[in-house]
Structures are given as structure tokens and as C-alpha cells.
Image 1 (cartoon, rainbow, N blue to C red):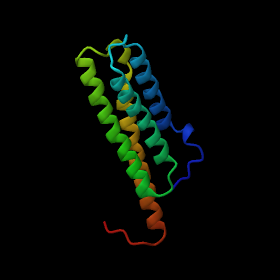
Image 2 (cartoon, rainbow, N blue to C red):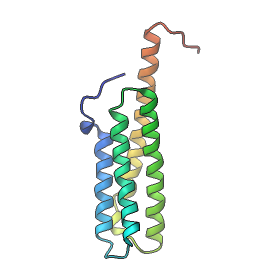
Image 3 (spheres, rainbow, N blue to C red):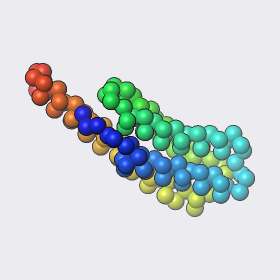
Length: 135
């Protein structure tokens, strides 16, 4: 597997930080319509996405890497659910979430591409060691 020296240079991580910034901005511009617990929940989910992605990218063990990235993906879907619910209730402005959906979609695409990249590298590495891979 390819060693990543600095996860901060990775596009997947950069986009997760963008998602966190968009989320924080949306919460800050909500004009106090959100309760403290709702604001904390949204912020926590956004930060957890970035944290899980950073942990996964910097992980050497493939099983832990997949676990961390799958948890990040699950957290993305939970964040989207909460944001959609609060938007429907009028607590978040859709104007402040303009880039939110596109950022989520891009992160999911990058996650899927990274899963494929790691799985391909692991298969090639396993095959180069002489292990038999059934076709």
C-alpha cells in the first residue's frame, strides 16, 4: 500500500474540512433559530467526518482504514439527515447551505474512489507476494 506522509495534502481530507467550514457557517448564520443542542450536534457530526477521514487515511492497517472510512461515510449520511430535517423545519437557511450538497457528494465520490484505490493496491501487493488469487 502507498504510504501517505501527510493526510492534510489529500483531497478527500481537504473537502471534509470544507464541509466542516460550510456547516459551521450555516450554523452561525441561522439567526439563533437552532437550539444549542442542535448546533452542537451538527458541528460534532461535521468534525467527526473530517476526523474519521484523517484517521483512515493515515492508517497503515487496511482493516482499520476501511473501518474508519466507513464510519466517516455513515457520519456523512447522518449529518445530511439532520441538516435536511432542520432545513425542512425552517431552522437552517437553504441559502447558507448552497455548497453543502455538492460538497457531500464530492466527499462520497472521493471516498468510493479511495476505497477502490486501496483495494486495488492491496490486491496487487498480495498478488506480487505470490499468493494465489482465484479468478
